[in-house]
Image 1 (cartoon, rainbow, N blue to C red):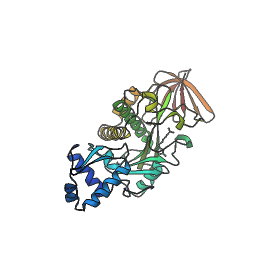
Image 2: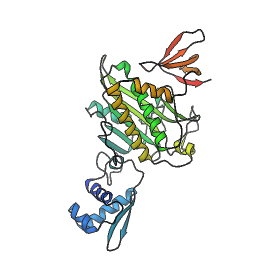
Image 3: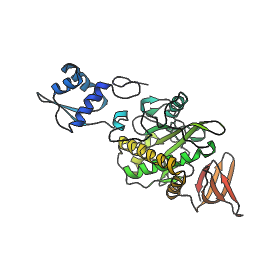
Image 4: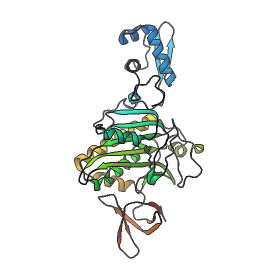
Length: 337
Ligand code: BTN
């Protein structure tokens, strides 16, 4: 964890900073006097000033009005637990939020926490990753401060063979979050890419710890390119990548996006636990672009051609070969012909 100057070990603000912000929010843009702040926080006026300065350093715009007090003018688009939690009531996802300035990989952190017994719904977020992991051993570009890198711990009571259902669930959640925070129309490309036009805007990497008959936990790894600009993408990306900013032409609040995503995950997971895979599968099919299309699937050295017909309970893509046979495809890169 880098840069702890006003943050606690979970990346949250220190309690006194939290108290100041809570008071500002209760007063809704009104001026709060230094006296009131020091009374509520039970610290001196000088200490209040010190905390105001540290919040400003984080990007909070706090106006000081001589002989009247302070006013919160704007909050930064920083992924801090208390900012993400504003206005959210979570059933499971996000009841515990751990946010890093920088980490190796949020999936690695979440995996370790899950092994140590972290509760279902724990979310790990980082402003930047040093070794973001992509699918099939690829690297996930993770520059700081522009995107969302997030990993969610789940402990679903299902068989390990059904784990892919949760990947489909997370793809639907990302599509919902994009649709609610932008005017863009994303679609899902099997198995787990979120696309806008021809560019990949988000990817999912779900990792699991399981025994033969039981899942210990799943880590849903979600990377969304939110405000990344062209120069931040490497030249040698094999698949064209894009961001919400590049597609929509305007910056998207990462905080709003994160709240929308966690909300969608929470709702979908609740439905999944109550009603099973059916509703998720239906929404996934409605949001995907491969059904009924001629596709080529490549995996390592092999290639398969056919018509995409659907997905099954285990998340396999059902492809009808030219001779009519249905083949179950479990992994690979799809190209629509
Ligand atoms: C893909 O290749 O499409 C999957 C990309 C997954 C990236 C996310 S970012 C948050 C989480 N932490 C990681 O190291 N990877 C996933």
